Image (cartoon, rainbow over all chains, first blue to last red):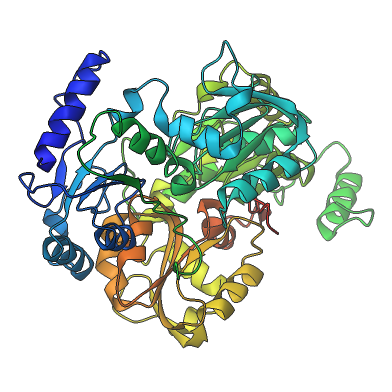
Length: 261
Length: 291
């Protein structure tokens, strides 16, 4: 079975679920030959050089990544052609016979969205899902301080950022994936997501709400501490699609802090 | 103003006592400057052709209001607006949007009491908000880079023919992190990656938006990049993948631009002698659950 065959089966499985393949999508091959026979599949939040090393060492030569490989959403490489970081990564991929394919747009179309489901599962929020509101979780009353500490413990995230009064009461949480931090409105106490633009983002709103005594909070996990877990859900989903080769989630992990040992 | 009358108060009092009713208006009257007049002066002095379209311009309040004082800030939060009003600075010059979107329309909060309360605060305190971002950032050399370097004590270390590259006395990454935390009064917003004991001699300063092209072009010349707001699928993994390893410090947009808001106040003061000018720090919005 080639990498191209795997993608065809994924497309068929999506079509069975009523998800048509989009003409305009970033879900394409990014490096390596699609005709390469697949020995094993690794799913990951991001195909960083470190993730690729671990995938290769584990014999997973087909890497399915949620985020880009070459540092921009479209994985355009023309401007990087002379860059040594890009060249070294491409050489590593070629030398180790890896194939990289992105699964982003269509992964978010699955229901439930595995990127949100994975985040909810690691945060322990799954049992508290609102019956009527998508991506909202209603938890037993806690404080922003306690919630943030719990989030940091469960994810292992070392550089999580929080905005809002630490002592504010929290029961209603909106959860979004990656760059999709849910809007912070009066309908929820806290919004949790990956990363957000600081200008025109939720932090200013949270600060203003706090100044007015209408406590609102934001927890920014970081992009990988938000979406990496979802690719574990995707690995599980893939096992229902592909049974011929081993499938493993290889966490990209927290990019911030010292390098992984 | 304190309880002791200023020299100007004394002259005014004396003058009005002496002048009784007959004299014409005192020629030494303090000039009255509207927000429109003051910002026209800024446009004249900035040294950059005014652009259309631009995000710069009045966002709230009346351009015809007389300016009693100017507050500069990175972002005009409610806390900043209250402090400006309390200090008597009715013209707030901000780098970032005030009402949560570039269009200043409140976005998802448009029908929300927080947005409404912020509008009411501006109206009730007769504040005028003017955004000054595109043109301030277009000045060369870049004001926010120079201001950040100054805040870090590195002004003397600038490489002559480069944009944002500084050759500093060698420092370990962990010590550099401590230096940055202290100098920039970071709370929880600073994130970093790199080897804690790696030596750092060359640093790229990239406040505000830290995009991929400028990172790719400058990182080869540096051991570390001090960023404002890098995207986590762009500059962050690019630095992570680079060998030999480099360091990235991500300050957050507000913290990275705070020194530039102070520099802007100093610059404004040089040509607005009629009114007081003060920089009001918005502060690091974030705290860390691990601190």
